[in-house]
Length: 210
Image (cartoon, rainbow, N blue to C red):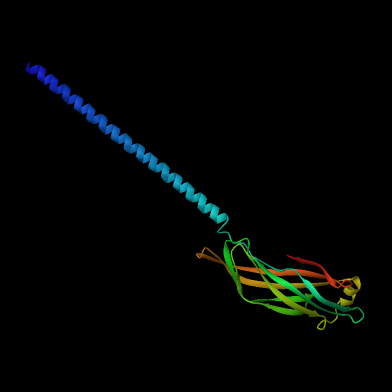
């Protein structure tokens, strides 16, 4: 009888040990699965962050040079004399600062625009300092008066006789593009426009800026 009790006790001991061992293994497996899931979640989060940062670097955080141009020109008067030769013109135009490619405002300093004929200065107009908002363009109206008084030894007579008078406008803006209030990058933009007048019609023939 004593021998049977010993065998029964031993069997129960083995059963408890097996059960405890199975429970421990189950808990370890659950912990392992949790660690795997956590590692997967962390990996997905890291990959997502990399994608977001890369996308922002290629789009939002990429700073492009704003554009500095003349807009519509409305000729108010145009007079020319081929024999002298001479000309006198007045027109209105728009000064355009285009910041439509940047996800940040462009704050620029005061500058000026010089109107020229074959490199000779005819007039200079001022551009007040200001700010072009993100993804936007600002336009400022300007009145311009030009004449040939300051010209000497030029080909003005030939141009007037050809029927087309070609002038240029040049300028340079210096400023900074501010991205999300955390990054500022200096950006300078140049104006280089060619203005052609139809002498006979006394109108604008073309305006090209690059």
